[in-house]
Length: 630
Image (cartoon, rainbow, N blue to C red; front, side):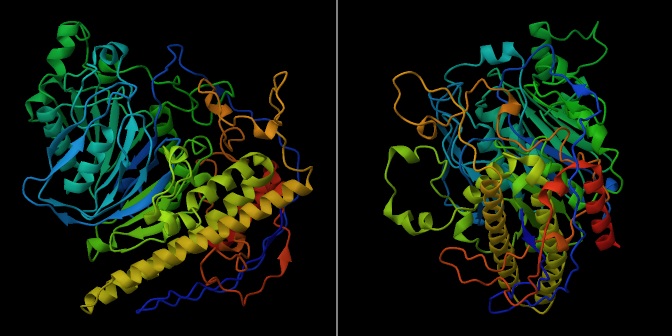
C-alpha cells in the first residue's frame, strides 16, 4: 500500500468564532522491511465445556481514576449488532405533564413480550449516543448508553441468565427492556449510583422485558456501578459498586459474591431486588446453611463462555467465543501502568473483539475538573474502531455532519420499502458507517498486509485529535470565562475532525483496494454453486450462516490482536501523526475540500507488507512512535 508523508497543518475551523491551530511538519519514518511472520508461541484459550448458546452482545471496560495517568475515570466499549448505526446528540427536553414512553418488546422478539407505556420524566438530560436499528422485536431506535450532560457514562452488555430463568420467562412479559433502561439512565440519572436506583425502581414497579439477561456498566467522575437484570419474569436485579482503584470488564457482565443482607438497602457497595436471595433459596439454587457465599454468577447465570486463561494466551481459531472471560481480561488490563486515554481507545479497537459485529466504539474520559459540563467529551468511532478513527464530541457540540446520521445501509426494513422523501437529501450523503465498514472488509481480507498501516494511520490521527481537542477545550473554557458561548467552537472542532477522519478513511479504502487489485486482484467468492444455477458466485447470497463460529465472521485478529501483539503488548507506544498519509486531495461528495492541500506530499512507501509482518517491522514502528512521544 502506498501512503504519502503528511506534513499537515490543521483544518481551519469555519465558524463565527474560528479556531486556528498549526501543527509543525513531521519527518517520514524509516521504511519497514518485510519479514515472514512467526506462529504465535502463546498458549491457546479454550471455550468452556459448558458451551454457551445465548445471545452474546457487546463489550465494556471500566477503569477507576486511581489507575489512570491523569486521574480520571474512564469507560469504554461497543455494542454488537448486525444493523445500521448512527451518532446522535439528544437535546435536553422538558416534557408536558402526563407524557408517556413506550417500552418493552413485541411478539416478534426471540423472547416475546408485549409493549406497554410508562410515565416520562418532566425533564430529560442532554446526551450523546450511538443508535441502531435492529434487535428483533424491540422497536428502534435502540441504544446501549453514551454520555450525558451530568458527566455520566454508560455501556450495555449482555449477561446470560441460567437456562431455567430463560425457560420460566412469560411470553407476555412487559416492562422496559435493555435499550429502554439504557436510554432512561442517560435521560434521568446524574451519577452512576443514581442510575442504579432509577433502573431498580423501574423494574420493581413495571417489570422487565428480557432477551435472556443483560447488564449495564455506569461510571462517573468518582466511581462505577455494574447493574444486572436477570431473565425469569421475577423482577430480579443486582448491582455492585466499582471503586476508583478497580478495573471491571463486562464480556459478559457479571457479579460474583454478593452480601445477602445488601437487599435490605444498607450496604454502600451492593444493592438488589427484595427477592434476590429468597427466590434463589426457593428454587434450591442457594442454601445459606451449606453455601460459603452467595455468588450471583453461580446462582443466576451461565458459566463464562471461555474458561479462564493466562495473560498473553491466544484464542484457538476454533473457539466459538474467543476471549469471553472478563476476569482473565481484567487480569490483563491490570498490568497496564498509569492507564492513558490512548490505552482505553486501543482496548476498544483491539482486533481480538473489534470485528464485523462491533457497531461502534465509545470511550469516555470523565474529567472532574471541567469548567462546565458542556465540555464533557465522548470519543466516538462510528463503526468498529479497528478500522475507524475516534471523533471527539462534547456535550456542548450542537450538530454533527449528516454523514454520521441515520442512513438506510444495514437498516432494518430498508429493503422492504421506498425512502420517505423527507429523508432523501440525508440519504444522498456519504454514510460514514458504510465507508469504514468497507475499509474493514478490505483491510481484514488481508490483515497481515494492511492492518498495521491502517492502525498506524488512525492511531496517528487520534493522537493529533487528542492534542487539538485539548486546545479546543481550553478555547471553549476561555469563551465561557468571557461570558460567551462555547458551542460554536466545540461544534466546529467536532465537524472538522469527523470530516477529516472520513477523508482519511476514504483514502485508506482506495489505497487498500488499489493495492489488492495490483497484488493478484480482488478475491472471487469461493462458494458452492448448485447444479442448474446460472448465476455467478458474485450474485449468490452473501449472508454468513448463523451457526458460524466467531472467527468465521469478518475480523482482523492475526492471533492475539495485531501483528505486534495485544493492547498490553503495545502499551507505552502510541500514535504518531507522522504516520498519517496525505489525504488532502480526497473530496467528500457535496463537501468543499477543507483539508489542507498546500503541504509537502513527497511520496514514501509506508511499507504495509513489511510493516505488517514480523517483530523487526514492529520494532521500527515502535521506535518511530517513541521518537515522537519524546
